[in-house]
Image (cartoon, rainbow, N blue to C red; front, side):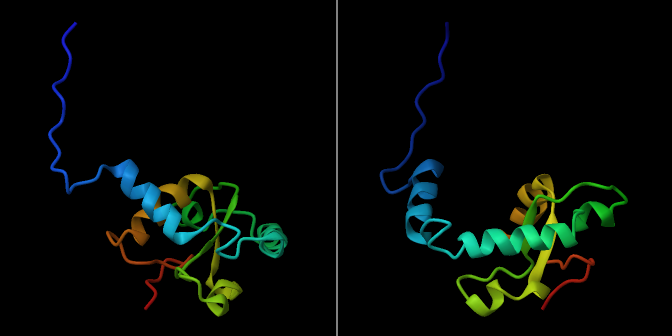
Length: 118
């Protein structure tokens, strides 16, 4: 059975797995970034008050939210981390797809009501 030839990669270029591993090691665990039991309780309370995904609602769909997302990435800023005005409820699909694309820089950060944030 034919096989693909090995991929040539210069010694200075790392593959995606290596880059991801290094990035995760630098940023620390979720608990080290503030997602502790206090966050778990605040997240549950927020989801009870805001049970639907705001991105799906904007598109006319009704989907249960499972993630409390920071609209503006907090990057370790505890004031921004705990600011409930910076939170939005998202379903797992929207958080994985739309939000991650926004944070990668390919789309501007959008608030739950559809307005770009500055």
